[in-house]
Image 1 (cartoon, rainbow, N blue to C red):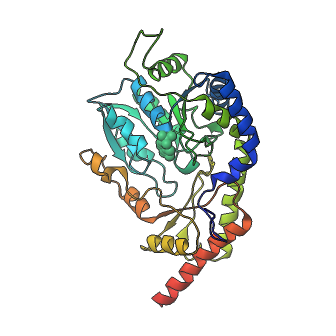
Image 2: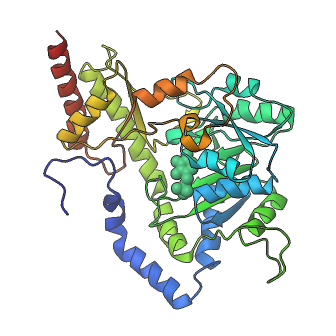
Image 3: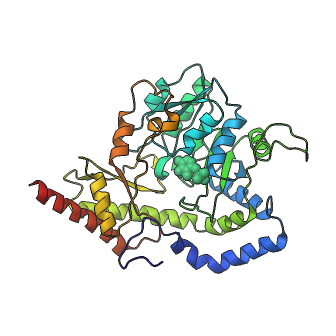
Length: 386
Ligand SMILES: *Cc1c(COP(=O)(O)O)cnc(C)c1O
């Protein structure tokens, strides 16, 4: 199906994958011929490459970012009676890994500017039962991971980085996935290093932890048919690894293009007069963060977000809401505790955020169309209001 003329999709993975088609086919052909569909050389190489890129000593492949988080908590022996601190404004998998093990998520609020966890709220949520902290590097920008790891260290609580959206991101020049006890990455197709199916990886600086993660990801089996632990089956397959190694070569250039697009949006929105009137709030860059812009997230106040989104859809401009319902309001997490001062910023963000196209191959004329369509909406809305 071809898109309507002039449409600007929220994401078009074909633009990155298309030009690499022949290279992919050749690499996939090699995997077919090798007959090694798991634990092959591509998986091992990718583990080394992602670990190197993230300045972590070890990388351990697994089947998804969701599994990476689950395996990290399993490796820490998290279970019933344990509490794990996590922001409520995140994707489901940051929380389900906790409840699946019978542990209790303690939801904390976010900062209104970066959408990342509020570190003061996080610190006050610590109790004697706290057994892990899961900061999420949301939208490609690191949480204040230096302070978070310092607090974790003071209380002897391990930090598991949910870096699913943040491969290549850094804080004070130190990469995501190198700070915590374990860093968790996803290769879901919409992520900055996106495969053609599911895939994930865990990074760690601790060889014993790497070994335990690897054991848990293969049924706790070592040697064959001798099970040391009750693990799960979570493998990164050689086809994904072969594809991802090719895409890895283009990751840094993709990040630069995303950063250029973000700066260009800032100029365009400002030139269009959309920033001055507080009609929209552009994403905030923490000066200590190297932002890799997996998402470009604006805020639309005054209850106009959904109307703006509908207007953009009419204009064939893709946009999405990440995330419309915070985790503490999900039916399946009904019975869990909200830390101290509540989640006002989380609920406000869920009502106001809107994600716009930011992928590396987005063209300048397409960005203009996005900005124009938003300007059009406010021009009309303000006429109606006047
Ligand atoms: C994508 C994502 C995950 C899960 O990754 P999958 O590979 O899809 O399982 C976890 N946390 C966050 C914040 C994500 O964006």
